[in-house]
Image (cartoon, rainbow, N blue to C red; front, side, top):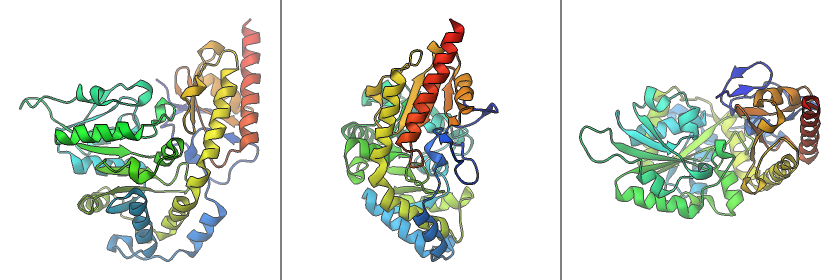
Length: 374
């Protein structure tokens, strides 16, 4: 499958598509919610941030962010890390040993977009299972657990992703997560939650983060996606877990000195941004319903739960790359995720008129192509 940024055919993670500088005027950038720019309030907080050496544990702004993140998730402690990929890798490294297996959904970020770091660095193998709409059941996980035989590699960890990015931003019900954790713990297995967009999941469910993540052994979440901070993610868990996480963060090159400059933006994101995520979800619903009405495009709007919309374009006579290139010429940026699959992601830098213009461009491009084909 191809994962290509429109214009240029550079194969990348769909969530690694930031461009430098200010948002381009007139462009509707729906490639990912990673392209968001920090708000004016974030920029002011960054400029005024009190800082110290975080490797020595002396940066007061980082310490405040870590404390606030732990409180938000009901965990004993938290750690500020440069990226979600590093946060996931640290967690996998802590809960596993070389030769172990990590059960995850086959479309999950830890399996597809983290450069096989669990193998290259943590020494583990991904053992994938397929869940309907990216959401695993305990029975599907149970079937992938290795028997206790000395010549089999052993299961050590289950990784869940909430929301499930490449399944279209689908959401794990809290009851499902709790069941998986309860059954996993009975077998001595740990559960890590890749919660890159967990705030979107909480908004979709109308649930509290501490309730949603109470039984997982560790959780990672991003400050730099829907929450709009320019950089950074958090991992949270027990004090013992975070003590080990701090060691691996340093080992993996993530020790940041006067990091309060960026932690300040993370604090604003954590406190202010969740309250507006419902707007992104409403815009995603608008997009999905509009896309469903365009002949040649296929999507079930009922499955759109958060800010990610993935639709099929096979009926247009164009591949996903061709369609993304065509709308790109009209200053609408989208992302291909497979040969005939296109992803658009709503966020704080795309408003309702922008989404409406994206729909108009999609309709114009697809209609023109279909007429030419006829």
